Image (cartoon, rainbow, N blue to C red; front, side, top):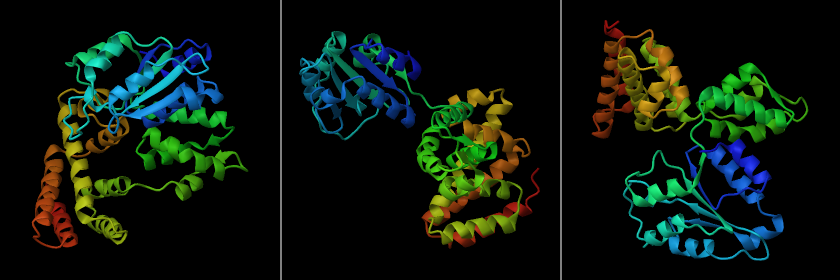
Length: 343
């Protein structure tokens, strides 16, 4: 398995393999890999020697035929396979008749004058399938798994350095908070922040506050500590602000419910000896969210977390069955939860 830096070196030295598997879900890294491969071809050859196939819309036989063709007026063809859902165990309603036997044959003996790149942005592939086994055996695997919080900050800092721009430490923390520590989201916000800092060459807290919008998830997350601390007034204020912003009460409650489910899971598993790193892997949650959850559960017992979770679950049932106004249900929940004597 290689990382992007190793891929860059291989491309610079024109040492390309005939078959690659890009494995992982970090969209910013996936896009970087796409661009690196496209840069491996001379610009004037891209039209004739590059093709990308969406396998959710095109039969794989078309792509195999292209990959097996000789390059036009050049030394190498470049072919991308996108959305190869048949490599996973997921059932889909797609009615395309993919010739997977021919694809496996191609994986066994890939065309030496073609670089075939298979993009697999899935949590996991179905290792039981012969096709997957052959692909992993034959391909050079490029790792684009989700970047952890501290790595994301380092990579963002490194990228800004190449743009001759710095970022204040508090501004970086605010960017992490507003994006949930998601590297791809952070990278997506950088172009406008860099443009905003064209004169000063420094990204400030004010710039991040002005230009980076908080998602509904982040806005709802502000409710969590207020609920836990039983601060009825501030919690209701934020709730009503979200409703005024046209956020659906059921969606607000669903995000809150999910967050309290996570807190309860982290509390239980942590008490069983799981480390912060293990929790992210076991729960398949971004490490930054685990980090925040670890900070919150220190001060609250399982009965408190469970009471909040069950109360929010009751709200969901009542909203879905039309048993009361959502805002009044949340207010009643807060009053009842605040009155409970749990630790």
